[in-house]
Image (cartoon, rainbow, N blue to C red; front, side, top):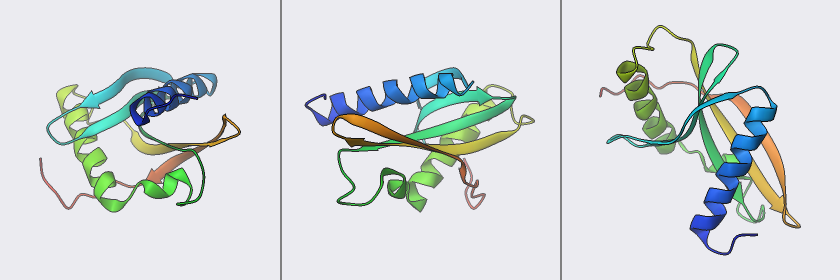
Length: 126
C-alpha cells in the first residue's frame, strides 16, 4: 500500500482506470485541470461522456468514500466538465457524472461505481 497521501491517491486512480477499462469505458483523459477545477477521469461509456470522480479511503471510520463528493465538489466538477465539452465541441453529446469509490480493507480495494451519481447544477456560469 502506498505510504503518502499523494501516492495513495495516484494508486487509487490507477486502480480506478483499470476497473473502468474492464467495464468497457474508453479512457479519454486523466487529471483534466482547468481554472474551474479538476476531473479525475474523463471517459466514454457506450457513447456517453463520463466525468468520473475517484474517492478512496483506508477505512470507513469517517464514512464511505463516495460520501465525500459534496455539493461544492459537484459544482467544481460540473464547471470543469462544461469547459471540457465546450472546448472540444461536444456540447451535443450525452454526458453524466460518475463516482468511483475505493475502500481499502486489508490492502485490497472494495470498488463501487455509481453511475449518474449527481446531476449538473446549472446555477452558475463559466
